[in-house]
Length: 150
Image (cartoon, rainbow, N blue to C red; front, side, top):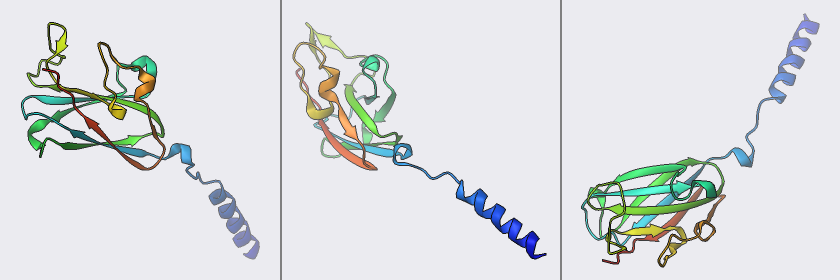
């Protein structure tokens, strides 16, 4: 009886000692993005998240469509949860007429846009490397101000 008990105790101890323990590389992170300077409640905001350069700008890792009715004082806060630690880039389009595209007049954008690190491009898209942010903590908050030319 004692031998049976000891055998069962040892087997239980050995099996529980091999239970998986999460390491830091498996933790999930959250990124909060406060979008500022939204000029009106018309249309929607498109938020694009990239985690590899070959995704930028046409094939985002994640994208969200944000209803602008929740904008208060030209601002809205969105959360991107369940992200792996790493480096990310964010771009935003204020699609005021909901045609799923940036509109232009004589080559000048007529709708708002913004990028992580508040990069302000001139005459072309910014470089992916300029947009990168490090997401290594459980929760990180960034601010992106939208820019309107016309």
